[in-house]
Length: 277
Image (cartoon, rainbow, N blue to C red; front, side, top):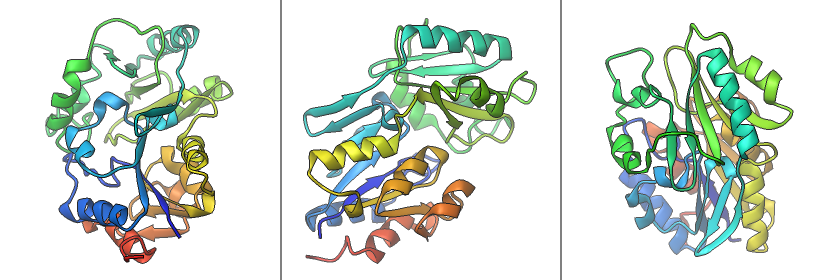
């Protein structure tokens, strides 16, 4: 039976130095040659996708935690936070002392210090883990000043000194927006992701499956962060990697080896995607 594999990027196939192993690339290519469909399913927005990803035979992509869904040349859906919502969040960011990054289809709108997380690797405990120089090179052409009128999602950081927390943000906004722990790991403070309520990787996966006339039982989803929860929950086979978020480790159908041990390749092998049909 043809399977539809949905792969998170960061922490699942892209490591903290922004590299995909040759074994994982080969697994994606082999699975596709065997008649299966493989999709990107990431929290990243479109401008954050490295060109080398498009050299792999993905059948489509889910970006911005499900806000944008594309199969071939066809856009299946596009969702965004409107201007009123952005103004409401901006008031909260300023009150709480947060730094932020609004992510749009074609542009990024960071606060003054937000990108320091990726510039200060090895120099500050308040930097993202790993070498993000390739990421900065990728996104800088899309970075602009100001505040957008709409955005697919937002990522914000609360330092240890901030007057808020992810729990408070969820209590204030969780009834109207998706508010979840961020997938970028920091040693101090909290990273938080914001999106359209009811839109997530799981809802986007359903759209893709419907487009192909497929059933969730045919889906295999692999991820490691909180934003992968709905996708793993709704897939016929939900897989997380060793070291994944506790929420995923508790509910996954199977735990694959870590990204350092090519967990996606091991999962593809275990569930038959690498066997010729």
